[in-house]
Length: 167
Image (cartoon, rainbow, N blue to C red):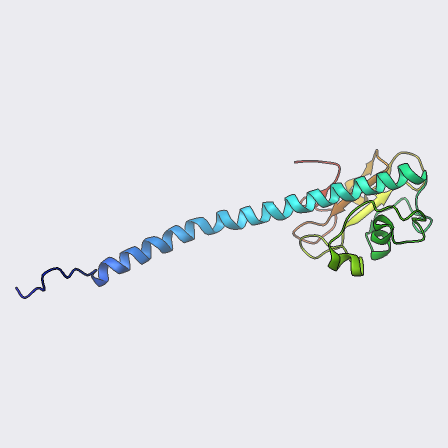
């Protein structure tokens, strides 16, 4: 036996076993991490649709009417012009009341997008009958409704993130 005293090393087999165990643990954790990321995106999106609905309700409370540029009681994409109104930077908001704060980058363009880079959708009660039409989501008894098309990016599917139904 020609071993050097005091010198210990791992064998190649031992190293491969440790690497395999680490790989198995990573493979088991990966789906849980992806699920947590998806839930975090949905939670952020849910907070934004709620904030947008509160902003539209506050606008109506302060002015007693809806902006002239939205004559339809139907679902519409939340375009930059609508975001400008809620941010207080539009002629449709003559007192320049800021109903929501936006990050500087979004405030420069007013192009507000959801977590999946899609525009939000909204419907406001422009015929003042206390309900709005949210497409295939149905007619809702409220003066404003906001939603995101969700992870699949397709409107009116079960993964839409909506302001009127909390999970």
